[in-house]
Length: 245
Image (cartoon, rainbow, N blue to C red; front, side, top):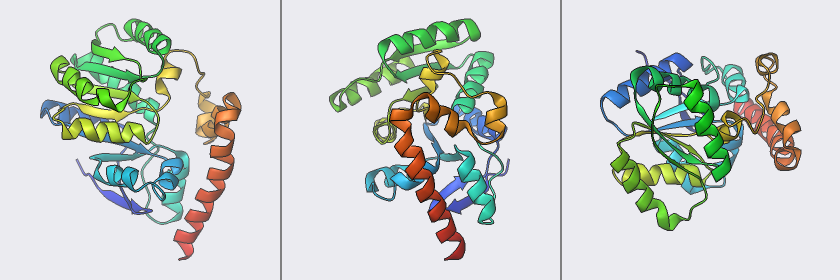
């Protein structure tokens, strides 16, 4: 399989489809190789401009997907096209299906206790063959990182989904890899809230129009308005600067 890369805004994106990403993850699981599977959207591209620690972790990631229609559109505008958007929640669900079929063990970290319990209950129905090696909420301090790393290694989980906020999520994944965790580690943002049924996913027709960000903002305006309204403008200016530099 070709694993071509395209450099955009200083980041080496893997030019992979969803299916190709799943196949690479499958290979890493077979090789018992710990990797950081990272989705980068416009918000993260802007964040690493000011956060050097986050930038360092992003540049170290093993697989970097375009987790946002804006990134894919920008790549085409700049003449370095990425094949498609690999949305984090869609990739997570593809990997859950893979784990259900191949009996890979998974571990979940993130969200509130009630939310993760609701998600586990729903996944148990949707993926009856899924092996859940462990799970816990995302409310813990840095002092517990070593303890959690030990617990993940003890569980022998092959895939770990981490739904906590950035940049802590990326730093935590980097810590786990540096402390001997050999799982595929994927940050999944707010996917636990969607899979638990607490937040509604945009209908397919909205996703196809590349307006899922607007649907999300209308559900959580207080949290997301500033991020999308100002962030989208800054990202457009960044794309234009890269085009006409």
